Image (cartoon, rainbow, N blue to C red; front, top):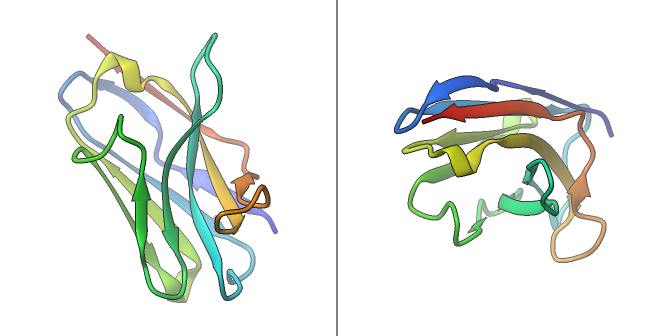
Length: 118
């Protein structure tokens, strides 16, 4: 599968950004799409995921209540609406695709940079 991400950029603290990721193929039953992030000097972190069949959503505690993940099934596209951004959200955001709950669910995109200034 090939993933194409877009929507990153520079924003002030408290602002919002919306990321998009389009897959070259439809996720299979039991698959999900989502986002990880990689900040300088930190381990890669799961951010959010969405099950493709039923739309069940999953969030890390660090973003729950601020970020919203959604999908457009017809376009094989997942979105991440990021609100109330803080400098701690600065990272490369990587789109993920794979079988939910398995190591197969992992980043496969090039990533898009999100920078939040204080």
